[in-house]
Image 1 (tube, helix red, strand yellow):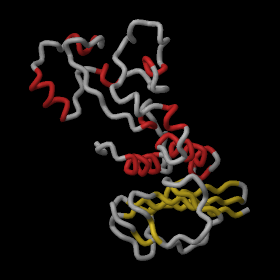
Image 2 (cartoon, helix red, strand yellow):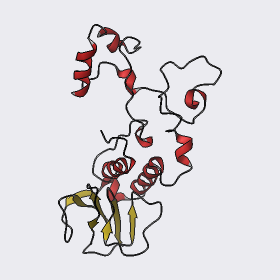
Image 3 (cartoon, rainbow, N blue to C red):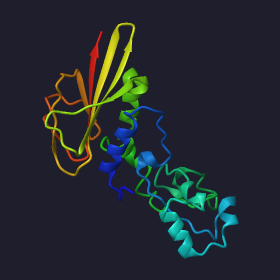
Image 4 (cartoon, rainbow, N blue to C red):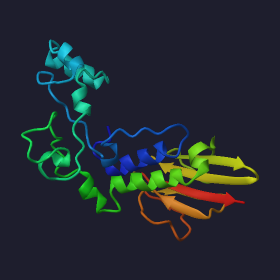
Length: 220
């Protein structure tokens, strides 16, 4: 759905991990692993086996409408590295239970662990921010507006108050492929981006395309 665009995937990750609710990451999402369609004929999924009579043209129409007859397509082995069987099974076995994803030689955990700008690194940073913040984990959400805000920028605050302590996290997400103005009315102690691995040191006035900025405002 994102056309293989990792910058858009990082923005979706930032949205998912800063709003309320329980985030669910299906394995492979954190790598940007695209959907791999498997034919009904060789499916091991019992649901798919029951619908093998469905013609290809109808199967394609149902797939476009979000109706999956073959769940095997969502169960490709996790690609840990670019080696035989992607590290999911011993290299000595003849084959894995389900086929290895054809993109596993390029999209795998080992290749992304080495790069701080990878989608996997982005997910890990966002998960660490969420774990370390009561506001992001359990705080309430308030929608708001930024100064000179564009319709392409979504802004909200996550707020947690307990025992006299108050934590506010400001979240701004640029859903466009253009730079956008960014200005908070309240100073923050720390500002993070979904596109960078370090905290932003200087005042930020512009948001990059598909960038999420997360500002932590803490008071005792």
